[in-house]
Image 1 (cartoon, helix red, strand yellow):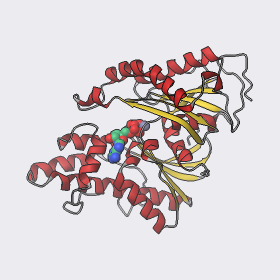
Image 2 (tube, helix red, strand yellow):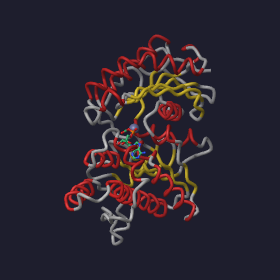
Image 3 (cartoon, protein in one colour):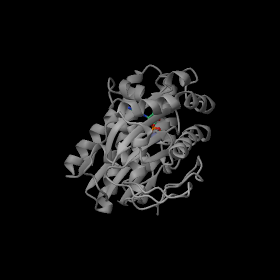
Image 4 (cartoon, protein in one colour):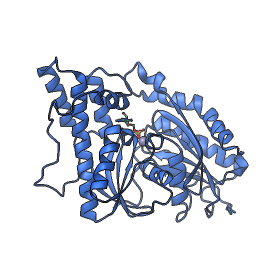
Length: 354
Ligand code: KG4
Ligand code: ZN
């Protein structure tokens, strides 16, 4: 039972294990909607990718992304409800990613969610995209509870976060330049692999020899074990210089060596963070967490260090709305909904961060 208050901007409410969230995600180039129950159970999840619309430009074109979200959003929401075998009246909360992301793209999802909330007199709640990536692990393993260390690696961000409790985060490290996904996409473009770069490079790397080249591991100086920040822009330059010097080297080897370097840095810092913070659980999230080498390495290292490890299914790592529904449900246990006054915020900071 969800008591809905009188103010549309901040109705009082209490989520229960039976509360269903209809969530929308449009922060970049995926139009997604999902129904999540009790913050842990995916009832339905629909993702419409815009890949073909951006492919010939070699990357995401913000204007095209916003337009595509507008075209797709109604059908995607309808599909999520149909797959869940539910009507709008069965939904308790409407949530959407409010930031960070592309301004025009975010606006479509936020506006659609608010319109649905108004039409149904349900509360609207805006969700932080990284918090959503973090909560994907709770859908993957419904028994997972903080504290743990999580590595969020996406196209826009590389963050090492200690989650002390629900809604309480400490950022332990972040990239000082390019995000890991951005590095994948840029290197894929340099190697002429096309878009989307990450998954294509991942596949090609699987056929190459990672030991053919040894790229210097950026910011992994053993004399600075407490430095948990990342840098990937120099690595991208190193790949360019190497290609110029050795144009005949198979690109599969270059891809494999690049990937080996990125995975080595990410995994080493994640394990270092767990050790330093004395936390026994490590978690992966974000689009780059779909990378086959990263997943395998993190699982292997966790086993060696006797750490519990949660690596969500690939479909929960790349952008989706189920994670948004999970994050919304958990935050609404201790906070009122953001309400209709909360807009799209392209550079939104992670809430509850110290
Ligand atoms: O989280 P996400 O779907 O969107 C953002 O929030 O940015 O992450 C997208 C990023 C892109 O840079 C994409 O190339 C990368 O994740 N990615 C991968 C793989 N799948 C997606 N990177 C490496 N290997 C993959 N298999
Ligand atoms: Zn994302």
